[in-house]
Image (cartoon, rainbow, N blue to C red):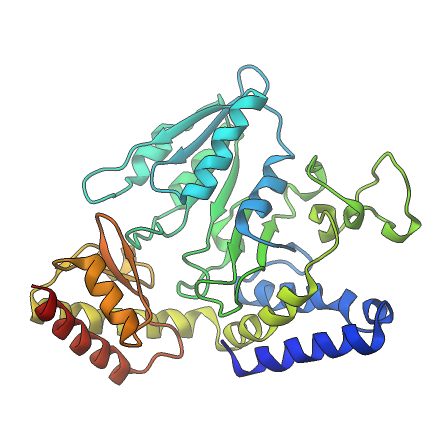
Length: 356
């Protein structure tokens, strides 16, 4: 948690208690733009192209509500290794006439980009794909996937939750139509803030069915409808924004944007290389890609009794998690020091020895 986050939440509670409804015009209405603006700078997005949402599932649901699935153009292509919450969301599109196509994973939960490309044709309405896989930290080369989507007239939706803040992401160079991410993983923003990027190429032709009064061009006119969508980023808003979550997220987003994606990526690769070298020294099996060009910001280590080892390390003050079939996930951030990496691996070796 950034030190500034606590002050921001205290500022929010003070405004709520002392200013009441006046806080909306005095402070709160501009908060979304501040947070989104930091992310736009970080991912090289066009100004006004990001909207904020409470989580990625909701952000993607807003984007997906823009789509129709006519006969002959009803396929949604995703992969088996996308985050489960999103896979559940895609499954639900079948009720609206979509045909869901999941590209299978290979050994080691690996996704082959060529197989995603091969699944795309003129029947595809949307390809929804992760930039970095949540389970193994495999970094996908999305260039061929997005190029194929454009060639067949399909929209593209990228889940960048596991990449933005650890990988240098430039949405103008990458070229997705839609991209989502959130605050909990790399952006040090706490729960309750996610974002949806909409490329100017497709912005004007997308009209969400999942909408609300803040998406109206004049929300405080309290127009009973029909809905007249805002021409800007509020087009993809819905109900009242979650101000305390945005207040908590503001500092982490701003700090990450100030550092910049290139510097963050350089340090991330250096620290994950250090983790890999220490893992090899200890004889631990590595379950994430070794190639720096194919690896996100996380190193996965399949150690004996991994779940129990994870519990022991958490009790010992090491922040990490465990995934069945993969092992431990260690994720050094931009604030992590080299000596902290060494200390974590020393504690890991001791924990494994205890559990053997």
